[in-house]
Length: 166
Image 1 (cartoon, one colour):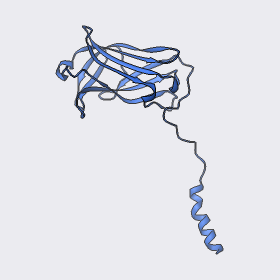
Image 2 (spheres, one colour; image 1 turned 180 degrees about the horizontal axis):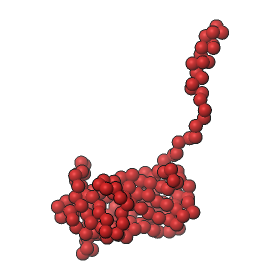
Image 3 (cartoon, helix red, strand yellow; image 1 turned 45 degrees about the vertical axis):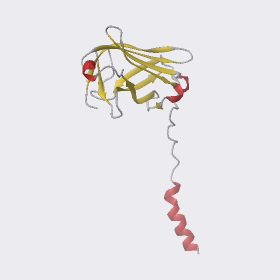
Image 4 (cartoon, helix red, strand yellow; image 1 turned 90 degrees about the vertical axis):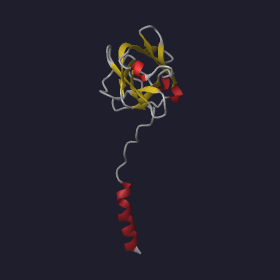
């Protein structure tokens, strides 16, 4: 009987191990002292953060329609303060090409290692009446706004839309 208890204790020993820090919870990220900021990076192609004159890949999605996917990074804001993210593309004549509004409770916000909020592959669908061939190579303006209880901040960039394989 003593031998079996000893064997049982030895068998369970690896299960006890050292306690680990709990994993990051989805959406939990401390507010930072930094000025609120927004960075968007195309989830396809070169995956370089968007700047004035940059390129945004657009593609036919498997579920239908024309989309782009943007990785989003927010600094200086707490996850529970993000009320809304609005993303809009317009052409040089002012015609809306795509408008998406996401509300805080539906956003898949995650905290990364550096303490900033991120969203991976935020989809933005383009107007169904505009073909991929028309969008390819066209100039567009991206406006993206993040709304919190205390502030609204975002991006306003002139960009080029480029068709890629979905």
